[in-house]
Length: 132
Image (cartoon, rainbow, N blue to C red; front, side, top):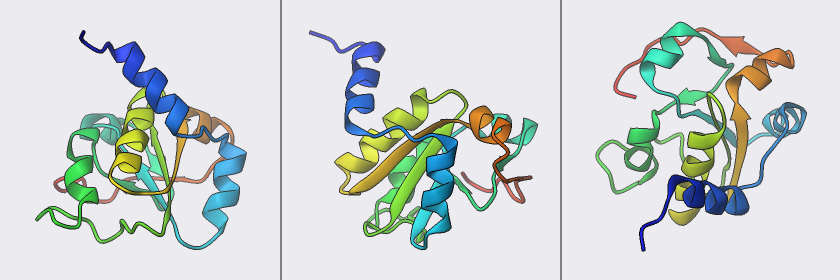
């Protein structure tokens, strides 16, 4: 039997704890935290991103997070706390689940970028979209 998107989201939400913007700020204030924006490049170009976040679109995440991949981003480390977010929380839930499946232990879903921005969270304009 095929798995639906709803079932995938339910499994991801069960595996990856959801954070409020306030909880995310607390975690980010501590060292050894990586914040990852998994929105697509056009979405990012139209808005801003969480200050200090790295951008890796959902489609490239596995390649960026795998040390054996030629596209590996050294920002990723299995001992880091990783916070993911997107536009509404769905892609970040799925991204968090795949990171956990890849061996990252401390992974959290911050959900929607808008919630972060509306709560007064620090934002910045992306510098370079690169090959995200």
